[in-house]
Structure formats: C-alpha cells, structure tokens
Length: 361
Image (cartoon, rainbow, N blue to C red):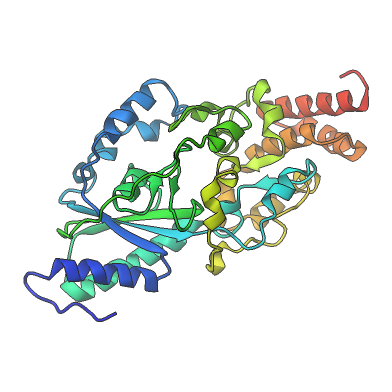
C-alpha cells in the first residue's frame, strides 16, 4: 500500500482507501468508516435499560457518553470500525455440547485474551495514519469503554445486526471480534449493508434459557454468557439445568445461525485454542487448585471469571452430568471450605447426583 503524501489538506478518500489496506495488512478482515450519529440506537438502548435487561451491568447505563462519541472523546468526527475473525480450526463445539461430562467454554475464549491483540493492531493502524498525515486525534477501543460498537460496525458496513443481537457478515458469519478508532479526521463514510435474517428465528428458538424475549431483545438476566461471566451471585435454580455443561459463555445462538456456514477459520496464532481447554472434563477442571487455574488461564479472557465463580459454574455442570461416584466425592470435598455462593451450587449438584443415582437428596 503506497503511503499518502503528507499535506495540509489530505485526499481523504485516498486516505480512507489506504486505511482499509493497512488494516488488512495488520490482520483485520475488514475495516469500515462511519459517522458518529447513531440514529434510533440511543432510543432502543434506553428502552432496553428501562426493562432491566442489562441485569445490573450499570456500566451499560452510561448513556451520555455511550450514545455521544463526541462527549466521550471531544473532537470525534468519525469511527473506524474493524473486525477480526476468531473461529478456531479445532472446536468440535456440537460434539462437546452433547457430552455432559466435558466443560464447554465459549469458542472465542479458548485462546489468548483478544483485547490486547486487537488494541495493539489498532495502535499500529493509528501509527500508520500518523505517518501519512501527521499528528491527528484518535483513541482506540476494544470493548473497553462506553462505546456502541455493534451499531457503529453496522453503520460502517461490516454487517447487520442479527436477531440474536450479534453482527452478521454475509461472507464471514458472526465469529469475529470488533474494535474501533475514534478519530477527528473527516473521512468519507461507508454505506451500511442490508439485513438478511428474513423470517429465520433459529437463534431465538435455540437459546437454552429462553433469554430472547423477541427479535433483537436479549434479557441478560437469563443469558448464560452473563450468568457464567459477569454474574457472581446465586444462579436461579430454574436456569441451572438448562445451562448444561456451559461453564464460560454460550455459543448456541451463533452455532445454529445459517450464515455461519460461511465463517472463516482464524489464522491468528493468539486465538488458537490453548492445550487442555477444548474438551477437558468438568471433573478435572473442578479439581484444579487456584494456582492451577491461574496458571492454566494466564493471558486468557477466561480469567474474567474469578476462581470461585469458575468453580460455581463447574459445580452446576457437574450437577447436570451423569451420576459418577468420583463427582460426588469431589463435590463433597469442596463443600466445607466453599463460600456461601459456591456452597449453594455444590449442595444443588450433590442433590442432582443423588437423584440420578436413585437416592434421596
């Protein structure tokens, strides 16, 4: 890609074209540019928050900055959105979900934490722009501030908002991460793409806990991703059996999406599954000490779930697993030293195991 000659007033169309080329060279599968106006999205966000669907994630309620990029970063005129595929080659997702003895970890979290990988690439992209036009205003974001990344990605032409509230790309499905550069450069914007979900409701119908109250409406309080990652309290009992063996996140609504037949295998070394994470048994992980857990998850997004929370999730999975004496023994050993939240889930798991064995709880 040829550099853009420095000038007092750059050719912004040429610069936009160059930015997209530099982005591809840095490993982004697509780069798009949007205005900062968000149309109907702020109103929809307010309605979603009013219904309590954010499940106490109060950081989502910072609507003054979230819906007004210029309030978050003064001087912002455009948003450069990027996407990077993460789908690993060896996932065996359906196979593991059908095996109740194995721990299912959302496929995006099997490798290194994506935040640092994408942020570093965004910084390199900003450096390339600076080399071309001189000093300019920008800030990089990767799920790290009150930014409406999906609406910006949609407006930048990276895809459309699926009924499961995930961005879908016609040529690449939905298994990709998003990142943004807020900038003061008046770049030409890209056109949004049309939506192609049609009458399909597969993603809504497959949700194990019924978290979708309708198309584009997710009640986070029932979402397994929220329950296993963000929430650290007592999981409602009626949601435990539907969780199955999902111990960190959930991919069901994406796994069933017809557009993911076009998903591309990620070539990023950072996103390759770490050894022992794809199909390790629930029992083996439950037996990890905290030191083992920290060592096994170093540098991973999986670390977002603290050790006691991860044990809580595993306890639910073990309760859903077929009866095994070794499971009962492991749960019983953990119980005396468990905190109140973990102990509640261990007792439930023990009762489930005893029920399956034909014994009273």
